[in-house]
Length: 75
Length: 185
Image (cartoon, rainbow over all chains, first blue to last red; front, side, top):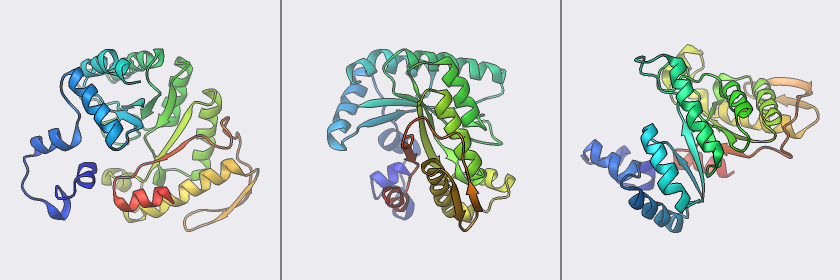
């Protein structure tokens, strides 16, 4: 829903066939190496501008990676 | 930029539920040590994707185990509460946590929850709006009278009041242009 709202044309009445995994990776999650995630969040901080990030880590490992390698470069 | 974590209590049934909670509390302890603004607790009922039916109870427990982290609700499901009781419980959590509550409110989306609580899903938006109005009024006024679509009462004193004055931060869940507009209003 958030992806549909942020990117009209994907989802809802405008749906064209998009691979769900591709859509998830492109429109829903921020993923990649810690360096890539830092870069993406810095980009969003400028573009939106993003002031508050409510993260939902998919695993304990990704939580620790985020805490140790991403957060110190942004908070 | 501030960071919070949306904390689910997802249970696959392959491990004891107590272990799910213990792992979450370990993670929350790490958040409390620094870097994070808040843990946000997801309320759900009758399913295993987050076994946390009471975010105020869970929040109070977490508040007692932490010192710095703010406690967010993400979200309290408006249609399933008496709003006066919700106002009381949230204010109590804010008080016991030393003013660390972020109140996140939402209307809910899971039809199973609406069926089990016997709340018509088509009323969720109106119930949500009325609930938020009552909770905020209960915190802002010494005594409250209210006559609405779903709730009706006179001259009630809600205690305690939140420690954060005039109010804890209020966050509203919004996933459509209409709900974003309503939240802004």
